[in-house]
Amino acid sequence: MNYKFLITLFALSSQLLISAAQAQIDEASKSFHISGYGTLGAVHSSSNQVDFVRSLLQRDGVGYSRSIDFGMDSLLGLQLDLRPADEFGASIQAVSRRGQSEFQPELTWAYARYTPNDTVQMRAGRLGFDVYLLADSRDVGYSYQWVRPPIEYFGPLTLSYLDGADAVLKTPLSDGVLRAKLYVGKAREKPAIGGNYSAVFPLTGSPLLGAYLEYQNQHWQFRAGGARLRFNNEFPQMQELADALRSPSLQYFDPNAAALADRITFKDKTVDYLSAGVAYDNGPLQAQLMLSKLKSDLIAFPQNIAGYTTISYRLKQWTPYITYSAIRPNTSTPVLHLPPGIDPNLDAIAHAYRVTSEGQLADQSTVSLGLRYDFAEKMDLKFQIDHIRSKQNLLLRNVQPSWNGRATLFSIAFDFVF
Image 1: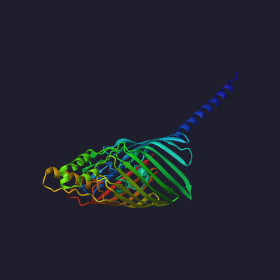
Image 2: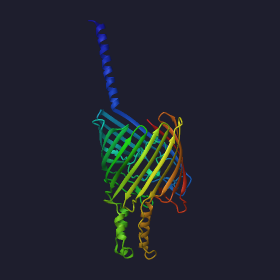
Image 3: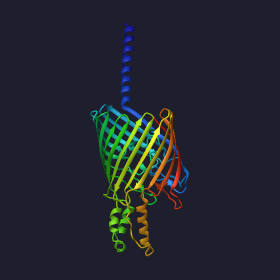
Image 4: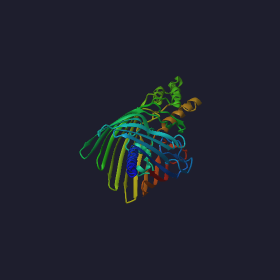
């Protein structure tokens, strides 16, 4: 028997099997990808008379409760992407961040994707709520210049994801790409509202419909869009106040009390999110201008307008930036006319109405100066100073009567992706 021939044949066969196995592993690695991102941050407030939060989805803040806070900006996100074929894919993302509790992991993405060609993409499952430009990536600190997205603009958003479906159509236009997106689904999150933000309002099952139109070329990006949310649930405290406003005794003092009761309740009421923005990116220079308007007839969810502008300029590894952001109420608060001191029950109703109507107004502005240092691949350090002026309490917690409406935040953050 020719052993040399058999040995040679065995060697060749083994090499072919190893090559085939390696090819399968390489192919599998292309369709299976794990990535992640995170931020470790610390914030100090110059005032101990008020707590500042990053968004309405956070209950705890920095200032009154603690002078230095490590949880306002810190978070960790993990993402798994699957692509078994060119036209099919799926993504799952979980984020651990401060919300109504301390760093409880939450599933923010879980969707399947179908891309039959370069023009159409469809997804279904749990999707990011990108009603504003950058809203879908506002947890990924490494993707933007600031320590945190401007609070006055992004902070009032009570949604970061929805359960539903979306479709994107895109086509070349001039020297860029035109995109149109339509999405529909239901909200799931539980923002904190109420006079001291101690109550949680479940948005579970609230229908959501939205769309935007976007154009992007080498240096410019323009977007305009809107979304409508219809509340599926009633907030118990609001229902109690509405029942009190409808009582016959209150009609004697204020005939409009019943009409105010109809504007207090949430169930089946709608709010509209409208936005427009432009971003410019050319070499080291980056600039953005964003505007939004919230339309609502709810006393406890009043109308507002918000916006920000930011400019940054990269010098090798260093990127200094300056940002101005602001939010203003865009409605007048209806007054409940009840005479004080006649009946303790009337005084309690008047107080509850005043807290409900005035506590949800937003009138705040911030000037931010910051510096980003990209010291390593996929890592950065950021330093930021925010000077805040506030006249209303929507984005605040534990406001003390002696607070003068001004404070300065000093922030440092370490961002990474992998």
